[in-house]
Amino acid sequence: MKSKVSQLPEIKLIAIAEDKAGGGFLAALQFRDIDGKMRKWMMPKAELLRKAELRRTLENAGCHFSDDEVKNYFALNRISKSARDIPRWRFAASMGWYNNHRLFVLPRSVIGKQSSEIILKPPRLQAANHQVRRRGNLSTWKKEVAERARLSSRMVCGICAGFGAVTLDFVGLPSFMINVCGSPKTGKSTALLVASSVYAYAREKDLPNFRTTDAAFGEIPAAFNHMMLPVNELGLLTGSRANRYDRLRD
Image (tube, rainbow, N blue to C red):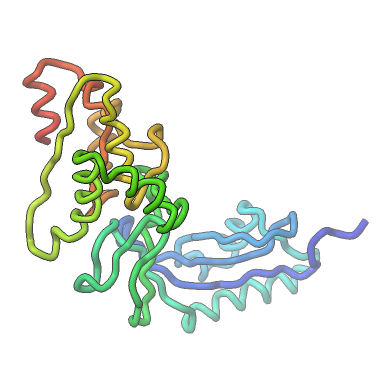
């Protein structure tokens, strides 16, 4: 019975990347797996020099290898030799402005023209803002969100906050908080969702909220560097009034 994939291993080193958040350098590889699909994989750069460890790591990742060990040896050897002339990436430490406000890093893309030989990439680990992604398009947002929100001063304020947050760094202003309060079912969460739809969320259930431990909550602001951080359900805070205020202030 013939294999579903080519008998020759397809492994390519596509970049050497520096991880500013985690530290160290990584090797970005692309290979064909045992099911015939192309995959991308990141590993410590030092493993490129140790063929036994490189082979073991790729095997565990599902990489297809030939029955001919000579072909496998040459495939792995090519990877090690190509490391010197490969493109360079740099994974940003966080979201926000870089390169004197010429580049803006988002969770899944970088806005702006990159002229450096080292290509800036979004941070590798983004657990706190995994729901931040592009949904829809500008014309639909104008019609379905902005046009309907224009009659609400609170929604307009939220939209302005969403756009204005990215400009604070230009003028050196510190961050601040806008707290919208009111009775239940009066549209507070809807207003927050409208504000965050400028760049992030499309569903209320995806919004960060105060039902989070202090340790986990402390990691969220860095994921929204130079952006508005929406936090829903202030009523979920527990403790005395003084304790709740202390947590908000922190």
